[in-house]
Length: 157
Image (cartoon, rainbow, N blue to C red):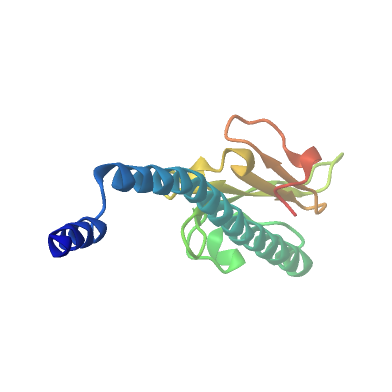
């Protein structure tokens, strides 16, 4: 009789109850609901580096072009690009440049922008949706709604 009870306990101890399994599923779900958004936020922040680097490279190319041609250019081939507007290396941002010709009262100007591309995941980075740099070196950023986030400094840091 003792052997029957022992084997019954051993068989019962070898498995999980439905309650134990459900508690485990709930714990894993809670951890995933916290970890996945935090991970995606970190990925988006790391991709901002590509936009900043591409803009600073574009600004440097504009300055080199100005030094040799006495004007800024919005032509892609003049700046060493195949197309403008065009994607950054990984395709998360769209680069563009607009040039204002000099006038009798103002010097030539350019504004280079990098805008998050829809469908890449970067478009969900609502705080730093558009990056801009000008000929003066001013670095600004805006949200997906167009609100200036330059004062917070989070996008260019």
